[in-house]
Amino acid sequence: MDNVRARSNSELVDAAFELYRRKFSVFLTLGAISLVPMIPATMLKNNASSFEAEPLSVVIFGLVVISFAISCLGAAAVSRAAGRAYLGDESIDVGSAIGYVLQRPVRIILATLLKGLIFTIGFIFLVIPGFFAMKSYFAVPATLVMEKPESSREALKRSHEVSKGWGKRIFLVLLPTWLLYMIAVTVVGAAFQLAAGDSVWAEVIMMAVYAATYPIIEIITTLLYLDIRVRSEGYDIELMAKGLDANLAS
Image (tube, rainbow, N blue to C red):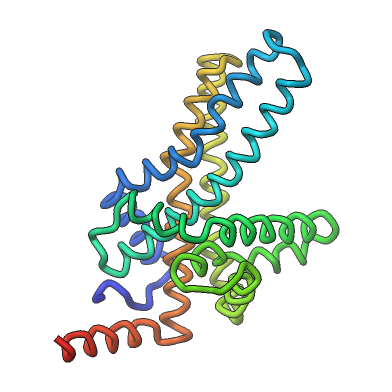
């Protein structure tokens, strides 16, 4: 638990990348699993002329829905693995992370869907409410897998509660992270597009790049959530007290 302490923004990002390197195979696998359903959807889309239009559209739509559900669970599994590893659980692996999220799949998918709808509505109608929603609900995946909210609504409420008073820090950490990530993915995508054209393999390679890099977003978000809890709720002291109680009991 010595690793759990209040960190500066730069220390938090450094800790996230160190954790990513330490558990690279776990995060890479979870990222890849999240994208598996999109590979056949991409291949079908690029070979649409070989199939009848209506059945093909239904199949692609079904794969997209499945992909969304799996990506929600995958993101939650990354958050679970990041949170547990940061708290000192070196036994966390792909199986245990996925096993945990599969105990509450509907709650995770519904909460992620509600979060996305709130973001979208906020940015479509008024930009400022969109940023407010981004700040308030940034920790929804983390609350779902690091705490035990009784419902999707409770997860949203808990994320909003954690974020209160921390808007500036949330934006200072997450906005540059997202911006740099999007620039990097765009540059890599453009390079592959120039090299391979519009082939299906260019898109598959881009998915592989996404699988390898996207987990860092969830890791930083999860560590930010834990860091805010340390600062506002004394979470590190709570963990030490639990550890002391366990030692005394043994």
